[in-house]
Length: 392
Figure 1: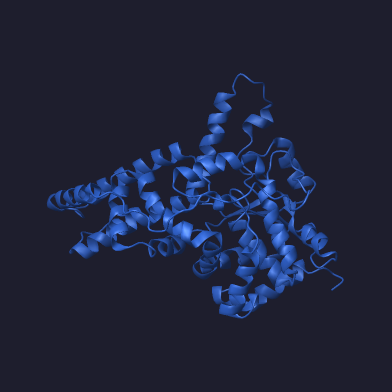
Figure 2: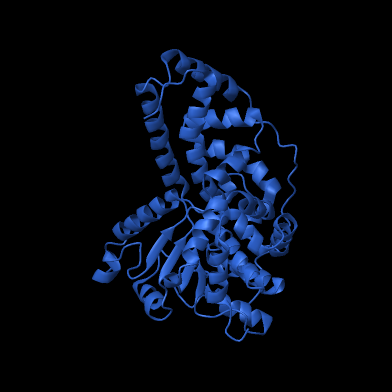
């Protein structure tokens, strides 16, 4: 239960911890193009209301404080959002570049592939064991047939799901809505009854953009932006609040976000490698919503660890852009609604080389980076032994 705040500083900390950080986890999902805006706002409104009720009922916020906060929010809202001095030029990004002709062998799962097999093919030599490390976009809409193929044809035992709790909730809501909306269309019992999880697979839900990532984003804000964001969130104006941080996200870009993720998401990286170090986990499928950025970072770390050529890793990363082309327009609309440009919908050249250089310059090697996150040397060697091709 929340404790009464004895000072304005404690009150601010309580408000931030109860509302801002929690909602930034949802924002991390939205900025990657992973949420339905309408449902997300409904969930957020309920969250804000519950937080305020708990604050008042537990005497954390007094009546006078509520009036003061309300007055301050009115003053803040009276000021228009500060014009962005970083003038945005019209995007010169081109349509998706088809890096490779590979298309997902699963009709209902986007961006699915054997990462080891693709890396070997890109290098022209076998360095990674195949049939063990798979990557994809979300599995929630996977058909009954494709679910069966994942288990029987590919033998996948474990799924590492890097999405947020909000993403999981919304996918469940979408599935329920789709079943109701298509009630007039004949379905088999298997299709209607299938859960979001696939049976015979162990699921490991690891929110890669957790509280550390949220705090990193908040640190980019000025005091004015910070207070304005807090009050917008408290008042339920979530999309307007999210737009406050969009310019900072634009400045960081995909490369900046990737480097910052490596630096601050230490706990999440360790959780992933704890799963990978268990021989009973393999074969493994790693995914987020699109299987592009969060999934891409984990796959990069693994391929760096195995000594795969940087060019081959870059080709694997960039392939996601063409593989995700079927839902590109939908994602662009979602990102534009929160003030982000199309740079977040692409897989530009240079991300992999920059991330690799960042690891080498700041940590020395991929092994030392993993040790920095808390992964043991034994776990690192086990993962390398599992994935390194037998002829090496």
